Image 1 (cartoon, rainbow, N blue to C red):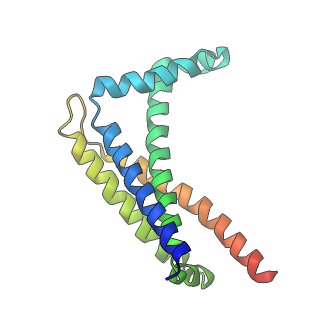
Image 2: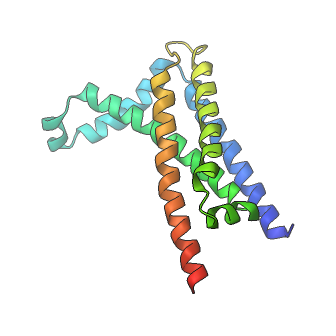
Length: 162
């Protein structure tokens, strides 16, 4: 294995570990701390006059919290995808159009992390596990992955046609 691939793998593994610490760190916050953080962001958005006319503060707060879940796991999926991309076998599978098989392994990893995260929240004051959040997390993983793989496939085909 050449040094560049090794370094890329190491960097992505470190990034994944840091991101996992971030995810579980956010889940370790009490319900009050977590709500306070997202409420500050929600209030900034709610200051926009048009937003106030369309949606209630509580509804917007819920949307912001769920979008955060969605995005957290989308980023995790992209980091794992980038790690997978450092392996030659992965690129061969993509070129053979066996995308679904590859993506499911990444999604399964994200589901396991999401379920573990929700289980962890069971032990945090004012927090609790939610199957709905695992579904939102999985949706974020899937959506980000699909977009990223479409971009990668387009790049691979463009490189192969040049």
